[in-house]
Length: 324
Figure (cartoon, one colour):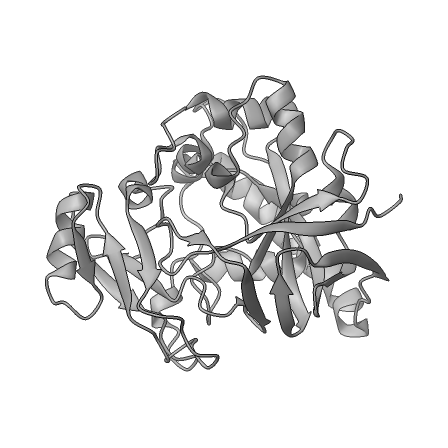
């Protein structure tokens, strides 16, 4: 399969998990993704988990921005202050003790804003897989619909999902980067889907080198390395879509519950791809994206991966049948 080249036409950074962020012209890609991305999260104090818009969609009606440009050393244990714009237009800063009460009022349940903890503190990330009913709700599945086959997940991700709500060191759900193409959005739009890029919250929006075409070309990048600006990344898996694209968001993105159903119908529930950084570097709007060949698989992963998959995937399928 040919691996198409592309160029970057948009970059987004989200200072607080599940809240609106904003477009930027340039970012630094570090070992965990975009430096400064999802540096904060809201904790649901009722269940103790990191809150996500899949369960608490009111988060999407809030928007966050940094107080000035954060330095290069922000990350786990090194936060940078943010200002949150609430749905009514009021603003509250991360240093203001009233921020927790304001978020509690917006979300309708006790909540607390928290920075990304140091790498040595993994308690903030505990959670792991939950009931099949909860997973169906987050994916927008009917009670009688089967869960997606987890065969698209690699062994490392399967192991993470079994233990962590987000991987230690990040508040991103699965991977540090989410890439999406204009061709995929155009394909959805041609099928009558409201394909506003903001609904899908990518790290970077990429345009095919040919500037045209149809289908979902980024799928050809899975298991390949890409030169992404000055960085190098490995595309690990397609992005499975949940209910978030159909929810209302800050900046006038209206609720449209049909979006998630349409993505399932037109794209098989996968839109975009996840990637991880292999070599750090700067990414700018206008940068080229080219393939650097298939991602090399370490010997240990080649040996252990099939064993983990043989054990984990049947367990997940069994859990999907047994859990309420």
